[in-house]
Image 1 (spheres, helix red, strand yellow):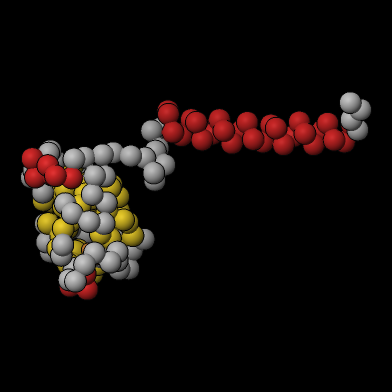
Image 2 (cartoon, protein in one colour):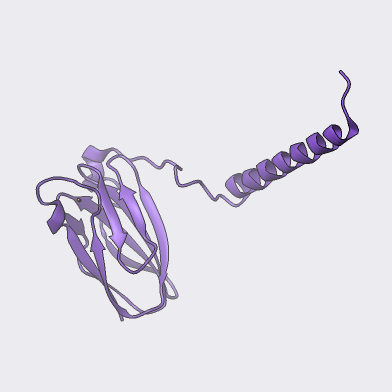
Length: 155
Ligand code: CUA
């Protein structure tokens, strides 16, 4: 096969770019442990109450200005409810659903997640501004869906 020099150069460059991206992605995934959003952490949805850490939901201080919120979602509420967090805190939400698919959207932030039964959802957020943040379920989950909300108070 006869190939023009330009073609060979372009093929080499594009192959190099593809390899470069694959190396970066591989490094992030395996060395930095940055799993993609589809990274699956599973749980038996029938045994949420007996499985750590969900056997003890709540707000936990894990470091200097670092918090963990272990939360279970079910029709039609969030547990814990009405959370309080100090300003500037870095908060990791660890969530699962006890029944159907629910949503976890915090108005005024970038937090918007699907919380599915059988899966563990984790999101980290730093709350810089004091205020009352409305938390809503944005996945239709049944007759009481529109009532499923709570607040995060940052002060
Ligand atoms: Cu839970 Cu809609």
